[in-house]
Amino acid sequence: MNRVVVLVSGSGTNLQSIIDNVNSGYLNIDIAAVISDRPGAYALERARLNGIEAICIPRKELGKQNFDRKLLETVEAFKPDLVVLAGFLTILSSEFVERFQGKIINIHPSLIPSFCGKGYYGERVHKAAIDYGVKVSGCTVHFVDAGTDTGPIIFQQAVEVKDDDTPETLARRILEHEHRLLPKAIKYFFEGRLKIRGRKVYISQS
Image (cartoon, rainbow, N blue to C red; front, side, top):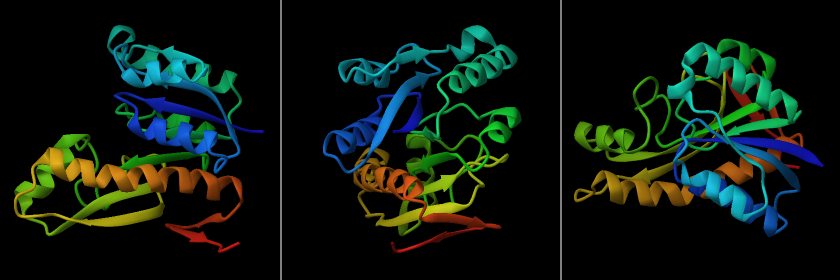
């Protein structure tokens, strides 16, 4: 069975979408562990409720170097075929990215390269989009490389920004697409349908 480790920082709605797609049979994977960098992340409770090993590695308590080392050691121990960042707010170390090169995917709540990179996470992204006055935002699933939100793009979905949107209302509409695209990217990865060539991801139809 294809083994996946999911990294989380918050409530875990994208994690829940993965779990739901496993339970429905859409995803043929084993979620080996859910790991959070924050003790209070509700995503850990979601994992426990579904019988998945839930681990917290507190970044603030450990400091960056110790956290980076502990995270890499912990994930390596599960021997995952894919690492999924489902709302994980810590930037991965270069050693981690190198170790799992081509086997890490992330979901970001904007149309990369807009409103991404350092400091753009959660509702900050949606506030920035609204404040800038863009007419379209959305979400992006991409492979992770050594940069921040700079890896090859797998899927994107555009979402209209309405005149009366708040960061909360825009986030809710974009989340609906995140919950669809992230499991789809996982499925396509394990079906061997994603091929990286330079900056582009080519997707086979079968």
